[in-house]
Structure formats: C-alpha cells, structure tokens
Length: 509
View 1 (cartoon, one colour):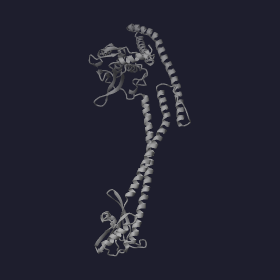
View 2: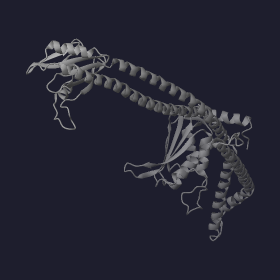
View 3: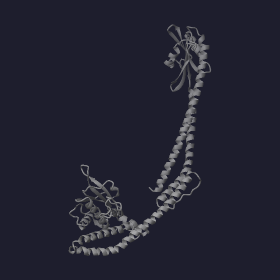
View 4: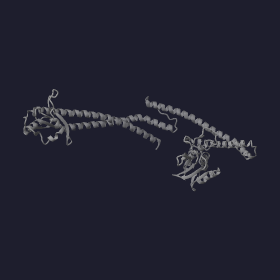
C-alpha cells in the first residue's frame, strides 16, 4: 500500500473521529434535553390528571358516601358508587361497607371493570389504618393513592374512608390516554434527537473538511519532504493556528534543506578526500610493499638488532595496505558504484577455498552439504567469509564452527566461536565503521572496517548479517555467533542495479 493511500486512510480516520465526537456530543446533549423535557412533561401530565381525579373523588366521598346510613345495603353502595362514577373525572368507584359487624359488603359502579382485587393490599391497609386525632391531624383517615398496571395499561388507584365508621371508597382511573400522549411526546423528542444528530454529523463534515484540508496538505508536504524533496513548501493563507503551522513547516523545511545541503557538501568533500587520499597512497604503498617483501626475504641475514625493526615495518606496511584497500572499498559503497559480478557458486567449495587460502583448515569445522549452488559474487562472498571467520578466530578463538543450510529461499551461513562472546553494549555497534570494543586500545591489528565491509557486501546481495551471543545449557555465554543470510537467487538484485545504472543513478568506478 502506497504512502499516499496510508495518508488518506489516516485522514479519513481523523475525519471519522471528528464526526463521531460531534455526533456523540450532539446525541448526549439531545438525549439529556429530551430526557429532561420528557420527565417534566410526564410529571406535569400525570400530576394534573392525578390531582384532578383524587380531588374529585374526595369531594364525591364527602358529598355522597358520607350521606349513606351506618349499615348500608349493597344496593345503597352500588347506587352511590354509580353516582360517584358518573362524573366527568372518568373513574370507576368501589364502596366497601358493613351490613353487620364483621360482615363486609361491596358496591361497585362496574363490577366487570373494577373489583376489590384490583386494589393493592398495601393501599387497603393504609386506607383502613386509623390515626390519632391531634391538632396537626384533625382526621383519623386520609386519602391514599398508588399507580398500578393491568394488562399493560397504567391505572391510578386511590382510596379513603369516611370518618365515624362510614364506608371505605376506592377509585380506579385508567391512564391510557396520558400514556398515549406521553408516547407521542417521546416519539417527537426522539425524532428531534435524530434530527439533531444528523445536523451535527453534517456540521462535523463541514468542520472536518475545513480543518483537514490544510492538514492533508501538510501531511502531503511532509511525505514529499521525507522522500527527499527538500524544496517542498506550503502555501500560507490566513492568520489562524493552521497558518502558523504552515509557516513553521516552511521555516523548518528551509532550515532542513540548508543543513542537508551543507552536510551533503561536507560529506561529498570528505568522500572525495578519502578516495583521493586512497588513490594517492596506492602508488607509494606499492613501492613500500615491494621493498618490504625484499626486506622480509632477507630478514634472516640481517643484523639481529635490525631484524625486529624490519619485521615491524613489514607488518605495519601490510596493515596500511589493507587499510587503504578497505577505504577504497568503502568509498565505492558510499558512491554507489559497487557492482555484483554473479557466478554459480558451490557454497561448500567456496568456504573451503576461503579457509584453505588463509591456512585456517585446522582451526575451523565446516558443516555444509555438498551441492548447494547459488548465483553469488564469489569475490564479495569471500570477503564476507574471511571477515566473519577471521574475526571469530581473532576474538573468539578456535574451534570455530561454520554451518550452512537453506531456509525459505535463503542461504544461511552461521559462524560460531567458543570465546567470551560479545559484550551487550557492543552488540549494537559491531557493524559500525571504525568501531572497536575497547576504547583503551584504539590502535590494534584491525582497522574497524572489516565487519562494516562484510555487511555492505551482504546488503548489496540483498541479504543481511546479524550478531548475537550463544548461550550454553548452564545459561552462561558460550561464544559469539554471526549469521549471514543471502537470497538463493540474487539475479534480481543485479538487474535492479543495472537498471539504475542505465538511468544514470550508478556510475562505473
């Protein structure tokens, strides 16, 4: 997936988050406002209906039920209940009296619609409870009410008793009309909430477009800047925070372009200096090498006082020659002129030849199957192997084990020693140029370029090298291990390099 698509996805994600936040804020506000409005209207509607019905029932109890005889008949109770229910309040009435002591009788305005079973027991107990008469409580019986539900329809049930042993009366009023009104109100508030959310989403889209357009331009400019187009600049319009951000970006890009140009100039100057110096040193080094070879041949016949100095000159001349060759190789990699010259290589034979040429046969154990052949650059592979095995022999000691295997279209060559291993703080830097593990020994036999050159040669093949410590069964470090991974077919790498060369990106050294 390209960077542009990833950028668009990220911007779309930010747009989605803005829309979701706007929608959630609008939804929360609308739900809260609708909930409060619904609750206030519900209480107002129910309280108005409830107070009107209870007040009318209390008045009817005082005007009609209070006129009944102490021992009314069932017909008396029924007629009075019908009269009380015939008003405009729209409730049913049930009167409960006594024909004789302990013999209750019931009269209902509509026995099919309202019976004593519809009156909750706690309400009956509260109605029949007689309270002491005081100045603060002039009546022993009070009016009580309760909301109930029957078959999904809400009802208001109220009851009271006439003072002085009169009958108890209960009213039963349906709240279906109020429920329908409240349902209509809920639907209206729900629609209003949905419209508010839709409006907030549309507003969020407009706001997101306004905000994200300059953000998208900034992201695109940052991507181009990251790709090396250091002359990328943003068009600054307005005086808001986004305009300040664009100005800051332009200033940073301009400063970065200047610093990169200065660094590139210094790097090019340093690279050219190293290359020129290496070339200039090769001529006198060739003469010195010839002289040292003659001195080395005559070393046995020299004065014993002079022989050590001759040996030192020979050793240091070879070391200087190796350093110059390494510097030349490094400049080729830095200049992008290093080339692969592929050939069909038998890996086991190549490793054996590398070990034999350096007289390491007695110090190295080779575990490699015959017949593993891969198109590689033999010279560069030899450089890699010589550096890895030589490093293992120098710092880890023999026996050094070299194993070869194939794994997922890759050639894997592991070089392991049985020395003290690599310190943890050194592991991240073993492939750095001129890096040496001991800062107290800046002058050693090596130049600090060997592993770096080995890594460069692995990379040009499309491979890699990793360094780690081997751990024994007792948990202690048991030597270092370098693992070289190369593609079994590096021909694609060669074609890519040749293509870049034909486009002028790579020049012959």
